[in-house]
Every structure is written in C-alpha cells, then in structure tokens.
Image (tube, rainbow, N blue to C red; front, side, top):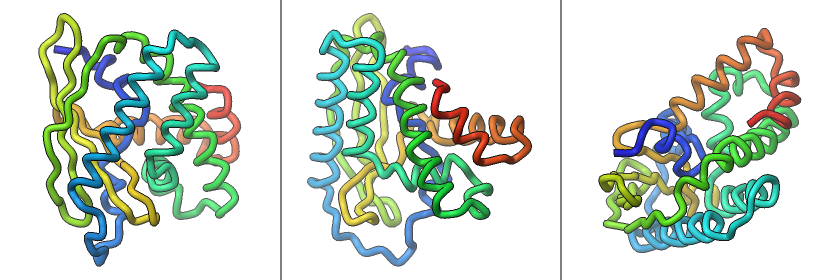
Length: 202
C-alpha cells in the first residue's frame, strides 16, 4: 500500500472538501458520466506522459502546471484552499493567489512524481453526486497493492474540469487547506505576503 507521501504526491493538486460547497446547488447536469470519465482519462494520460518523459526540475513542473490549467478548476480549488480568508480578499488578490498556488502545487508535487514511473491507472466508472460527477479510478503501482482514487468533476465553469481528488478516503484539498491556513497564520493573515511566498515555495 502506498505511504502517505506517495498518496499526497499522486496528482499534484491537493483538492478538498470545501470545494464541493462552492458549486451552485441549483446546477443542472449538462455534464454526463461519459464526459467525466473521458476528462479523467485524458488527464491521467497526460500525467503519465509527463512522468515518463524523463524531464526533471522546472521543465517537469511546467508540464504539470499546464496539466492543472487544462483539467482542473484552479479558481475553485484556490478559493477552497484559502478558506475563510477568500471572503475578504480582493479580486486582484484572488487572481494572484490562484496563479501562485498553481505554481506552488506544480513545484511541490512535481518533485515527487518520479516515484510514479510505471504506474497504471484504470477508469472504473462514474456516478452523479449532488451537482457533480465522481469518477472512480484504480491506481496500479509496481510492488504495491492497487488503491482507489476518486475524482470530482463539474462543468460549473463552462468546461468539464475536476475540482477534487480523494485517495483511499484521504481528501487532498482538506490537507492542503490546513497547510495554506497555517502558512497564512504565520504571516498574520497577510494574503499579499502569502502570495509572495507561494511564488517560490514548493
């Protein structure tokens, strides 16, 4: 079974429970299960290609950031990770935080992706949950037991994007939200200072 570090490094986006609450309760299902499955299939294929590319350092992190930008609802993820502080942040601050947060995640988890060389992911199915779809995948890693990865997919932004990942019951943004909250506390709630530090952290 993969250790906690491996689980946290699986996809680079630490996504979380709070994000679901940001989705409009009245949203209708324009998204279908096949579309949700297809999105995750494409995302997983690109992650695998990045892992197997042989790239390291900034070149690899740049690949991951492009994947996040293409397949993840980064504004929703960023707002959820920032938590209560997002309510008092200006539009300019939220925009800057989202960009810095995306880069931070790319560097932080990109450093760990090399351990997933040779991993294989299978999409098992999708089911509607409230206003989004949950796509179930199974990860197969050499020398380890297979484990479940759940992806939450929505089209609330006008495109099919994922906004949460749960690995064997571990909600990834919940953990990242705690970490970002602690970072903000150490900066006495100064969002601009957090943004500046996130640009080089990871």
